[in-house]
Image (cartoon, rainbow, N blue to C red):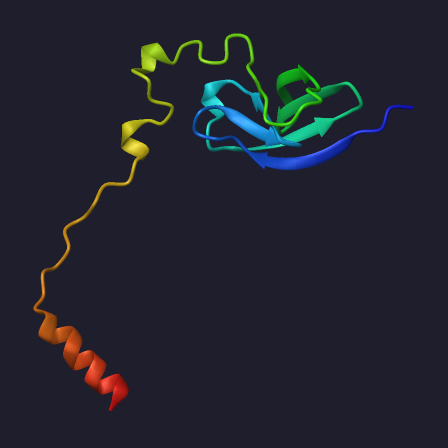
Length: 111
């Protein structure tokens, strides 16, 4: 009987999950997404829902980085952006106020 350990992980921006001190590669498209890790005695599998997106032999030494073949395939065509620019937050206009406004608020709360 095979025993598995399941854990949730967030994929880093550079396309890795950290598990037992080892960074395992996943396809770059999953950057910043939540995934499920299924670890057995000799293999580690990473799932997005029910779809397996990556599989590796377990690396016994912590501090190692295990790349996935083709991990960054297609990234150059996206100009190195794992996120669509429209999804990025943009800074809005901030009202400029005199510091006196904040001093008045402090007087009210301390008064």
